[in-house]
Image 1 (cartoon, helix red, strand yellow):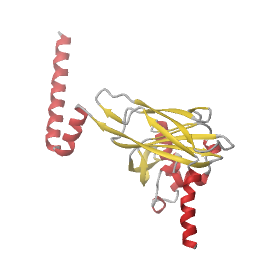
Image 2 (cartoon, rainbow, N blue to C red):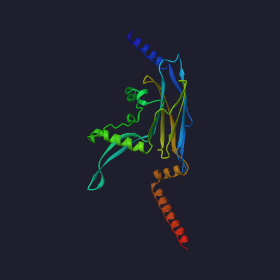
Image 3 (cartoon, rainbow, N blue to C red):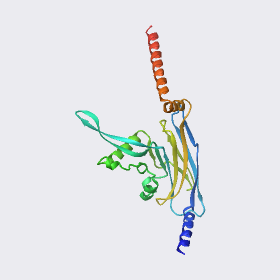
Image 4 (spheres, helix red, strand yellow):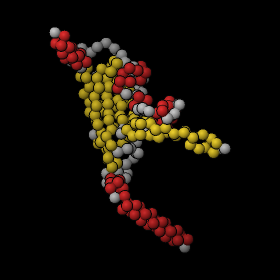
Length: 252
Protein backbone atom coordinates (compact mmCIF):
# COMPACT_ATOMS: atom_id res chain seq x y z
CA UNK A 1 0.00 0.00 0.00
CA UNK A 2 2.78 2.44 0.92
CA UNK A 3 4.57 1.71 -2.36
CA UNK A 4 1.40 2.43 -4.36
CA UNK A 5 0.90 5.69 -2.46
CA UNK A 6 4.45 6.82 -3.25
CA UNK A 7 3.97 6.03 -6.95
CA UNK A 8 0.72 8.04 -7.05
CA UNK A 9 2.43 10.91 -5.24
CA UNK A 10 5.32 10.91 -7.72
CA UNK A 11 2.87 10.99 -10.62
CA UNK A 12 0.85 13.79 -9.08
CA UNK A 13 3.74 16.11 -8.35
CA UNK A 14 4.65 16.94 -11.98
CA UNK A 15 1.00 17.78 -12.72
CA UNK A 16 0.83 20.48 -10.05
CA UNK A 17 4.30 21.73 -10.91
CA UNK A 18 3.36 22.15 -14.58
CA UNK A 19 0.28 24.38 -14.11
CA UNK A 20 2.50 27.06 -15.64
CA UNK A 21 5.25 26.12 -18.08
CA UNK A 22 7.56 27.86 -20.55
CA UNK A 23 7.32 27.81 -24.33
CA UNK A 24 10.31 29.69 -25.77
CA UNK A 25 12.69 30.07 -28.67
CA UNK A 26 15.93 31.80 -29.69
CA UNK A 27 16.61 34.13 -32.59
CA UNK A 28 19.63 31.96 -33.48
CA UNK A 29 21.04 28.67 -32.23
CA UNK A 30 24.59 29.15 -33.48
CA UNK A 31 27.20 31.92 -33.70
CA UNK A 32 30.14 31.92 -36.12
CA UNK A 33 33.30 33.76 -35.06
CA UNK A 34 34.97 35.22 -38.15
CA UNK A 35 37.74 37.77 -38.62
CA UNK A 36 35.21 40.62 -38.68
CA UNK A 37 33.07 39.38 -35.78
CA UNK A 38 32.41 42.26 -33.35
CA UNK A 39 29.75 40.69 -31.16
CA UNK A 40 26.11 39.74 -31.59
CA UNK A 41 22.76 39.88 -29.83
CA UNK A 42 20.54 36.94 -28.99
CA UNK A 43 16.78 37.44 -28.76
CA UNK A 44 15.05 35.08 -26.34
CA UNK A 45 11.26 35.12 -26.68
CA UNK A 46 8.47 33.01 -25.30
CA UNK A 47 5.17 32.62 -23.54
CA UNK A 48 3.76 31.02 -20.41
CA UNK A 49 1.53 28.02 -21.05
CA UNK A 50 -1.19 27.42 -18.44
CA UNK A 51 -3.26 24.33 -17.78
CA UNK A 52 -5.26 26.05 -15.05
CA UNK A 53 -6.39 29.57 -14.08
CA UNK A 54 -3.52 31.92 -13.32
CA UNK A 55 -2.51 31.74 -9.63
CA UNK A 56 -2.36 34.81 -7.42
CA UNK A 57 0.88 36.77 -7.23
CA UNK A 58 3.24 38.23 -9.83
CA UNK A 59 4.97 35.91 -12.24
CA UNK A 60 8.63 36.72 -12.95
CA UNK A 61 11.13 35.58 -15.58
CA UNK A 62 14.89 35.10 -15.27
CA UNK A 63 17.17 34.34 -18.22
CA UNK A 64 20.74 33.12 -17.65
CA UNK A 65 23.21 32.72 -20.54
CA UNK A 66 26.29 30.74 -19.56
CA UNK A 67 29.50 30.17 -21.52
CA UNK A 68 31.84 27.14 -21.31
CA UNK A 69 33.44 26.56 -17.90
CA UNK A 70 37.20 26.66 -17.52
CA UNK A 71 39.63 26.65 -14.56
CA UNK A 72 40.96 30.09 -13.62
CA UNK A 73 44.04 31.17 -11.69
CA UNK A 74 43.46 34.34 -9.65
CA UNK A 75 46.54 36.21 -8.46
CA UNK A 76 46.88 38.71 -5.65
CA UNK A 77 49.32 41.59 -6.08
CA UNK A 78 51.18 43.30 -3.27
CA UNK A 79 53.37 46.38 -3.27
CA UNK A 80 56.93 45.53 -2.23
CA UNK A 81 59.73 48.11 -2.30
CA UNK A 82 57.59 50.30 -4.55
CA UNK A 83 56.94 47.49 -7.07
CA UNK A 84 53.71 45.54 -7.55
CA UNK A 85 54.42 41.80 -7.59
CA UNK A 86 52.31 38.61 -7.51
CA UNK A 87 52.22 37.61 -3.83
CA UNK A 88 49.65 34.80 -3.85
CA UNK A 89 47.59 32.80 -6.33
CA UNK A 90 44.72 30.33 -6.12
CA UNK A 91 43.01 28.13 -8.67
CA UNK A 92 39.24 28.33 -9.12
CA UNK A 93 38.19 24.88 -10.31
CA UNK A 94 35.46 25.96 -12.70
CA UNK A 95 34.18 29.38 -13.73
CA UNK A 96 32.02 30.31 -16.74
CA UNK A 97 33.89 32.20 -19.45
CA UNK A 98 30.75 34.33 -19.94
CA UNK A 99 27.67 34.78 -17.79
CA UNK A 100 24.74 37.13 -18.29
CA UNK A 101 21.56 37.33 -16.22
CA UNK A 102 18.46 39.23 -17.33
CA UNK A 103 15.34 39.55 -15.18
CA UNK A 104 11.91 41.16 -14.98
CA UNK A 105 12.72 42.59 -11.55
CA UNK A 106 15.31 42.78 -8.75
CA UNK A 107 16.90 39.38 -8.15
CA UNK A 108 16.71 39.61 -4.37
CA UNK A 109 12.93 40.04 -4.69
CA UNK A 110 12.03 37.48 -7.35
CA UNK A 111 14.41 34.63 -6.37
CA UNK A 112 14.96 33.07 -2.95
CA UNK A 113 18.37 31.86 -1.81
CA UNK A 114 17.34 28.21 -1.63
CA UNK A 115 16.31 28.02 -5.30
CA UNK A 116 19.34 30.08 -6.29
CA UNK A 117 21.59 27.54 -4.58
CA UNK A 118 19.70 24.62 -6.15
CA UNK A 119 19.76 25.92 -9.73
CA UNK A 120 22.96 28.05 -9.55
CA UNK A 121 21.29 31.03 -11.21
CA UNK A 122 23.23 34.05 -9.98
CA UNK A 123 26.82 34.62 -11.07
CA UNK A 124 28.25 33.93 -7.63
CA UNK A 125 26.53 30.55 -7.47
CA UNK A 126 27.69 29.70 -11.00
CA UNK A 127 31.34 29.87 -9.90
CA UNK A 128 32.33 26.53 -8.40
CA UNK A 129 35.41 27.02 -6.24
CA UNK A 130 35.70 23.59 -4.64
CA UNK A 131 39.09 23.21 -2.95
CA UNK A 132 39.98 26.90 -3.01
CA UNK A 133 39.99 27.07 0.80
CA UNK A 134 42.94 24.68 0.97
CA UNK A 135 45.10 27.12 -0.99
CA UNK A 136 44.35 30.34 0.89
CA UNK A 137 42.97 31.58 4.17
CA UNK A 138 40.71 34.10 2.41
CA UNK A 139 38.92 32.27 -0.44
CA UNK A 140 36.09 34.82 -0.55
CA UNK A 141 38.52 37.62 -1.43
CA UNK A 142 39.77 35.73 -4.49
CA UNK A 143 36.22 34.87 -5.63
CA UNK A 144 35.24 38.53 -5.25
CA UNK A 145 38.31 39.57 -7.26
CA UNK A 146 37.37 37.21 -10.11
CA UNK A 147 33.83 38.63 -10.15
CA UNK A 148 35.14 42.18 -10.12
CA UNK A 149 37.59 41.61 -12.99
CA UNK A 150 35.09 39.85 -15.25
CA UNK A 151 32.29 42.30 -14.52
CA UNK A 152 34.63 45.16 -15.46
CA UNK A 153 35.52 43.44 -18.75
CA UNK A 154 31.85 42.77 -19.59
CA UNK A 155 32.13 38.99 -19.32
CA UNK A 156 29.77 38.87 -16.32
CA UNK A 157 26.58 40.96 -16.48
CA UNK A 158 23.39 41.40 -14.49
CA UNK A 159 20.56 43.33 -16.19
CA UNK A 160 17.73 43.52 -13.68
CA UNK A 161 14.40 44.67 -15.08
CA UNK A 162 15.53 44.27 -18.70
CA UNK A 163 13.05 41.52 -19.66
CA UNK A 164 9.83 42.78 -21.25
CA UNK A 165 6.69 40.93 -20.13
CA UNK A 166 3.10 41.47 -21.24
CA UNK A 167 -0.03 40.36 -19.38
CA UNK A 168 1.97 37.84 -17.31
CA UNK A 169 2.16 35.69 -20.46
CA UNK A 170 4.45 36.93 -23.24
CA UNK A 171 8.10 37.86 -22.63
CA UNK A 172 11.28 38.72 -24.49
CA UNK A 173 14.90 39.34 -23.51
CA UNK A 174 17.88 40.63 -25.50
CA UNK A 175 21.32 39.39 -24.44
CA UNK A 176 24.45 40.88 -26.02
CA UNK A 177 27.39 38.55 -26.66
CA UNK A 178 30.86 40.15 -26.63
CA UNK A 179 33.42 40.02 -29.44
CA UNK A 180 35.91 37.87 -27.48
CA UNK A 181 33.72 34.80 -27.12
CA UNK A 182 35.15 31.46 -26.03
CA UNK A 183 34.37 28.68 -28.48
CA UNK A 184 31.97 26.00 -27.25
CA UNK A 185 28.39 25.37 -26.13
CA UNK A 186 26.54 28.25 -24.46
CA UNK A 187 23.68 27.27 -22.19
CA UNK A 188 20.53 29.41 -22.10
CA UNK A 189 18.24 28.79 -19.12
CA UNK A 190 14.83 30.41 -18.69
CA UNK A 191 13.22 30.34 -15.25
CA UNK A 192 9.68 31.15 -14.16
CA UNK A 193 9.38 32.23 -10.54
CA UNK A 194 6.42 33.07 -8.33
CA UNK A 195 6.83 34.37 -4.78
CA UNK A 196 10.57 33.77 -5.14
CA UNK A 197 10.21 30.07 -6.00
CA UNK A 198 11.20 28.52 -9.33
CA UNK A 199 8.11 26.86 -10.80
CA UNK A 200 9.48 25.89 -14.22
CA UNK A 201 12.74 25.93 -16.17
CA UNK A 202 13.56 25.52 -19.87
CA UNK A 203 17.03 25.03 -21.32
CA UNK A 204 18.38 25.73 -24.81
CA UNK A 205 21.89 25.72 -26.31
CA UNK A 206 23.81 28.06 -28.61
CA UNK A 207 26.81 26.67 -30.46
CA UNK A 208 29.72 29.10 -30.82
CA UNK A 209 32.54 28.15 -33.17
CA UNK A 210 35.22 29.78 -35.25
CA UNK A 211 34.66 29.95 -39.00
CA UNK A 212 36.60 30.91 -42.12
CA UNK A 213 40.20 32.10 -41.58
CA UNK A 214 39.74 32.08 -37.80
CA UNK A 215 38.82 28.39 -37.90
CA UNK A 216 41.70 27.54 -40.25
CA UNK A 217 44.31 29.22 -38.02
CA UNK A 218 42.83 27.72 -34.85
CA UNK A 219 42.83 24.18 -36.30
CA UNK A 220 46.34 24.65 -37.69
CA UNK A 221 47.69 25.81 -34.31
CA UNK A 222 46.22 22.72 -32.60
CA UNK A 223 46.89 20.01 -35.16
CA UNK A 224 50.10 21.24 -36.87
CA UNK A 225 51.80 23.52 -34.36
CA UNK A 226 55.19 23.46 -36.18
CA UNK A 227 53.64 24.58 -39.47
CA UNK A 228 51.61 27.22 -37.63
CA UNK A 229 54.79 28.55 -36.01
CA UNK A 230 56.59 28.75 -39.36
CA UNK A 231 53.59 30.47 -40.95
CA UNK A 232 53.44 33.00 -38.11
CA UNK A 233 57.16 33.69 -38.48
CA UNK A 234 56.82 34.14 -42.24
CA UNK A 235 53.90 36.54 -41.79
CA UNK A 236 55.89 38.55 -39.23
CA UNK A 237 58.89 38.78 -41.58
CA UNK A 238 56.64 39.78 -44.47
CA UNK A 239 54.93 42.44 -42.36
CA UNK A 240 58.31 43.82 -41.25
CA UNK A 241 59.63 43.89 -44.80
CA UNK A 242 56.47 45.62 -46.04
CA UNK A 243 56.72 48.26 -43.31
CA UNK A 244 60.37 48.96 -44.15
CA UNK A 245 59.53 49.38 -47.86
CA UNK A 246 56.78 51.85 -47.02
CA UNK A 247 59.06 53.93 -44.77
CA UNK A 248 61.81 54.00 -47.42
CA UNK A 249 59.36 55.33 -49.98
CA UNK A 250 58.04 57.93 -47.56
CA UNK A 251 61.58 59.27 -47.00
CA UNK A 252 62.09 59.92 -50.70
